[in-house]
Length: 219
Image 1: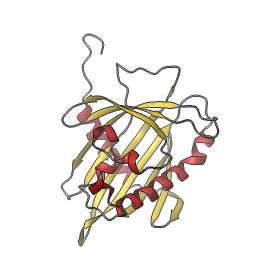
Image 2: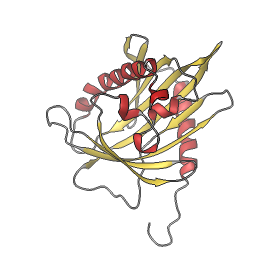
Image 3: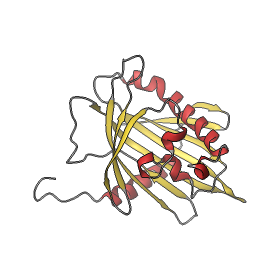
Image 4: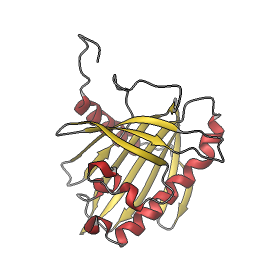
């Protein structure tokens, strides 16, 4: 960090991001992209591109949900159940009591059309007054990890999961996930949009299978 520069308030970034996603949840202009096997994916246009919203239910209480979104280096189990993960490697570069920051390298895709990307992600979880939980994971800029020529720096403008209790069933939760990403470089938006729905659907299917296999108890 440059001498004299003030450190970012990462806790505030996490809190503000959660509020942005709660506001997005109430929007009425979502367009359905896919609805199958209890998984519904919608999107809405923003000034930064398409924001995707994935909703489904899981047979776990909200308190367990954040572990499934957290990477392995931080007691998470995301990579352990996600087949063909987009994430090639994860390095925790900063860790505090209420948040941690990672550098994540993403595999190339589409037969080499999309080269490797990296992003710096801020993770923070917590509970709300309605007994729900959340895990925010937007990307951020970090003074010690500026963008390089390779890999190309990707940006996750929106990234987070909200877990709400299902009324009458404390061992079940409703999941609302949000993603809005730019892969950077010279990729046309249409190329990025073409495979996002499939990625989010496959991840949700694998997540349901992992819960059924009780990954949170065995890992």
